[in-house]
Image 1 (cartoon, rainbow, N blue to C red):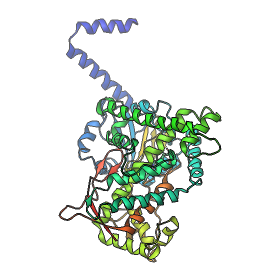
Image 2 (tube, rainbow, N blue to C red; image 1 turned 90 degrees about the horizontal axis):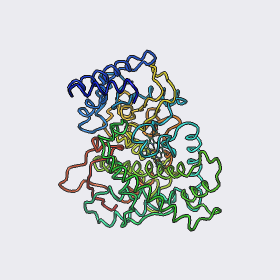
Image 3 (tube, rainbow, N blue to C red; image 1 turned 180 degrees about the horizontal axis):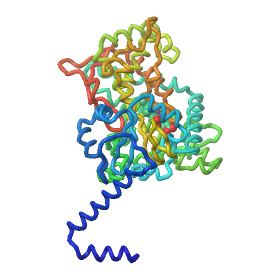
Image 4 (cartoon, helix red, strand yellow; image 1 turned 180 degrees about the vertical axis):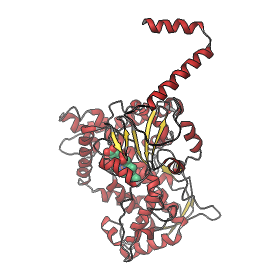
Length: 500
Ligand code: HEM
């Protein structure tokens, strides 16, 4: 042991516990003062951060309701760009469209990394990151390009993505029909329908509504196990049920590995059926082996399943909440469906251009019920100047989407469902820059087009076939508050689906 450390050890063994605690507290306080006085760093204003825990105590107190609105008063107090500390981790929160654009678009070169050093990601994907969601730098760019082009090519295969979504929408209608207009909870079957679309692309197979695909409950439980912000700090190991989460992650990985093994038995390099076949092909070909490692391509499979299932399902769950609360809107959408599609066929994307009210209603659901309210964490790969503040390398940057989509300066009466806000005087759909539920810049959601197609076809097919109502004697479901974990989901609710 070095001499100084030995001397300190000798000294502390002779004094009492209170002296040791005072010494440790003094040391932490000095470190904290030194770190917050770094002249090269200029943090934006933010709440008081304590040593070790940062502003977690205030966050836990103000976030007791666990709503995406919890942090809004902080922006009023500290400003639209805010510095907070989750435990030891410095985080910059951006609460306006202009600031998110400055960070994610103008400074994309240095604000597009992911914070893979944080405890939770080190445990699940490794310090260097993997796949597409959790990779940074030129490897991320290459893997993102590969994922996008593969999804496009797979969609051009045997059956187009649109046909698969149309089939699944028909199955969903048949399944709901079995309820014969009685009250039921739509949540699970919507989850199964959305999971089937990703499963077809990734695994080449769907599940019947009566079986539960093994992956789905694992995914749903994993998503519910943590609150967004706790993931960012090394204290996650004490604040979150890490053992349970890790066992769910292991289960998820092992179920996907089983699928890979099953695919290897019938693999034919000239007939690529789905993403797993592509994984086998790419890893066998050994092109660019530094980037196309088994781990990276395996994690892309996990990413697509993780990012593409719950998000689209939850958007559809919110759509039904809003339809039962707004029968007038539901009726106008149905009138448009009857005019443009009728009852004889299922919706296709070409119909959208002739269905402005339906498009406006879907846009309004995306906006009002922001399913990924805080977006995903970005990180600075170099020192970056944002709004006049000098932000050091290794800082987490959160583009907070919820305040942008609920700012009364961007959208009047932001907590009300008003599809008309998206229509001009000629009844045409208005585009708005401020509409960023998929984030923006080079990290923008990779599945945006896919999610828009799924939302349009599922929503239209359901309303073509049913009128959704609140069951007799029940309270209407909450259209503003919900369960906010990683995604923002409505509280459990029942509806009646009356055949049209
Ligand atoms: C309503 C549906 C969806 C919403 C609201 C949504 C939203 C988002 C958001 C906010 C991000 C973070 C972007 C950022 O880091 O700034 C994201 C990333 C991502 N999404 Fe989506 N998403 C949806 C559906 C999907 C679907 C269906 C897929 C897959 C087919 C998908 C795949 C991804 C991937 C792979 C990323 C990471 C992109 C990257 O890091 O380069 N998402 N999404």
